[in-house]
Image 1 (cartoon, rainbow, N blue to C red):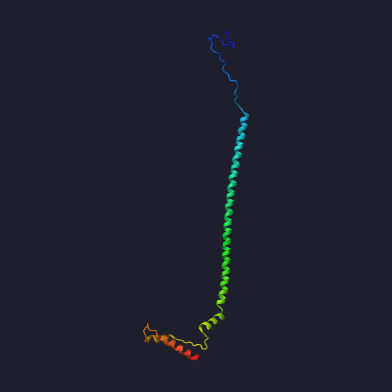
Image 2: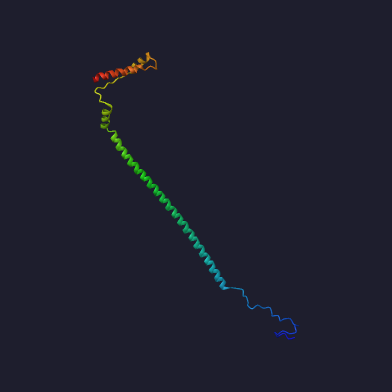
Length: 167
């Protein structure tokens, strides 16, 4: 039988012609330039993305640190302002109190209050009583420790002398 014909026999005695096993294209192994270029571009793009993300994270962290430092500085300045105003009020109060103390401790004022309100006068004579240890010992020998009547006697004598000097 002739094998060169691609026709089928109509009687069905022959199986359908089978084409030889051969692919329509050929796969060549080797340097596929397009794939290599895409691989280089992909690695360059991933490196760029990594660098961009790293820079974004660094700038975000620096921004947060900057905001935190600014907030802390503002709080510190506010605390300093409060402390300065407290010191200023304390100084003003100290000045007011020193003026009031000066006015209240004036000797003219004290003398006026003593003479007008309490009928006090300046002493004309000064009586000085000196008591020596021997005189005190003599007084204690005759009396018990709980009886201090000798002091009352000395004060009465002193009052009598001062009334006599005023009259």
